[in-house]
Structures are given as C-alpha cells and as structure tokens.
Image (cartoon, rainbow, N blue to C red; front, side, top):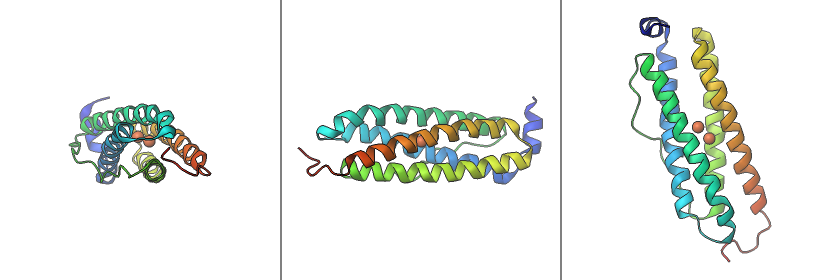
Length: 155
Ligand SMILES: [Fe+2]
Ligand SMILES: [Fe+2]
C-alpha cells in the first residue's frame, strides 16, 4: 500500500479521531501507571499489578495509533487528555471505569468513520483496540464492585 494512497483517501475527521485516540491513550497510560505507583492499603496490593499491566497496554495503543496516523500523513499529538489519578483506590477505579467507557464510545465512532472512508486497516486496528478497552472496562468494573462492602478500605 502506498503512502500517497493513504493520504489521499483519509478524511480530516478520521485524522482528528486518531489524534483524539492518541491523547486518550497517553492520558490513561500515565494515569494507570501513577495509580500503580501511588495505590496504598491492603486491598491495593492485589490491584497494583493490574494498573501497571494495563498502563503498558495503553502505551502500546498510543504507539499503534500514532504509527497509523503518521503513515496517513498526520502529526501525532504529544498532549495527553487531563489525567485523574484519584485520592484512594475507590476513586481511582471509578475514574478508570469512566475513562474506559469514554474510550469505547470514541473507538466505536472511529470504526464507523474508518469504514465510511474505506480505510480497512484503521478499522481493523480500532476493532482490536476496542476489544482491549472492553476487557479493561470489565476488569476495572469487577474490581470496583469487589470493593463494595469493604468497611475500612485503609487497614
Ligand atoms: Fe487503550
Ligand atoms: Fe483501556
């Protein structure tokens, strides 16, 4: 596939969606990594590794989307969306469930626009990433539900 072909068929709307995706991925990769570093308390011990693993996964998403955007002739943003670390584990998980919900909505829209553009490669990339975001959403939601009923989170 030639680079010229990619540039000539990519809509401005799709380019903007890719950059929105990059900004989100940069946000959550920092957000989850800092939650991994800052999470405290007994119940956090089990969650720390989850934050770290997902943070690395999000950085890979940022890389993949940036590579795709550069190939299509765009310039990947270096600015993350606002980062929310949270004051305690419950707040962290609530922020993360919300972030994943937003990512799922954005990537469903990106898939639709890529499809409209006839950009099969971008559509497939986002279908794969969407699957990961749904897994993250499931993981964070389960952890949050698991916290309900803990009377004293900071033991
Ligand atoms: Fe992601
Ligand atoms: Fe995610």
